[in-house]
Image (cartoon, rainbow, N blue to C red; front, top):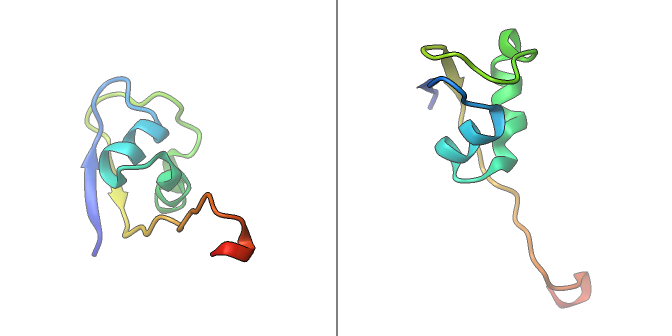
Length: 67
């Protein structure tokens, strides 16, 4: 399912990822889906970005032999 996000003045890739995915780790997924804006660091208002599905990688604080 593909959604969209409309930027507000001052949005940055990591803050958008946090807003739409709940984690800054989704930033690369957003960048890949919106290559035409890859050179933008700080967004102006009203840019519509595509927001593809994202699944956060599983992380664990346990060492590999205890997982």
